[in-house]
Length: 350
Image (cartoon, rainbow, N blue to C red; front, top):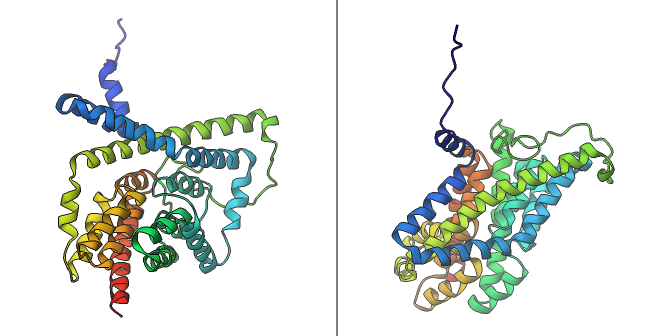
């Protein structure tokens, strides 16, 4: 009697199924490259140069976050780190916002650190405070902003960075006290399966974990998993950013953000998300627009909205957190950017 043998999936179909379920970023990356090869092969070189250069520029932050996440899990220090963030919520949120406003992270460089913090169980509220404040200001950005747009603008943007962090952290905390936003991370991310590590009874960490083969294996697996996850999403994000730089004329941004009144602040908030490419590169653009008559409030709204939710950063956030957290992140970013731009506009009128 002949045994019934179930048909095996064809290799191509099996590969496509795996890519669709597990590797959507690489699949999207490959399809974009294929489209460029067909439609505009001359853009392939600049796009790959952009992706490579951007990855190299954030490599120190990427390496640090991988070592933090993998080392915390291997030594058992993740419980201690998470427990350190279990103090008074207001203090934790304030510290997150202040640390973010002073840290030297860009909107993409902060993503690996955020992934490490959430993965080891740091509460979402102080992480969100750090998350929103960090990309907006750092010491070198302050100096350059003061030189291009003036000291008043630089000081205001610093205060706004901290204010954005406080706003986001407070909103998240209030929602979480009502039972919302549990398990913020997507499944399969980080040490606790994307929900973030749960606080357990902390055991003394084993700092010399390399003497324990099991801990070494855990360190290696976590490091590889974190690296591959961040690499695929950031590569896609930087590839899309390169296409925007190539195909979205700077003149279009200039024409859109000109004018006076409330409408330019609204438009600057919305345009800042897709049109914002780099915090340093955006400063001369805003300086030119302000010289042409754009109100400072619209310039501030553009810098705040773009700094927090630029396309690469938004894609990386999407990869990390669940949809409801991502939607809240966008709402706080856009609403806060508009509010801060309006407040700064009213301040300049005094």
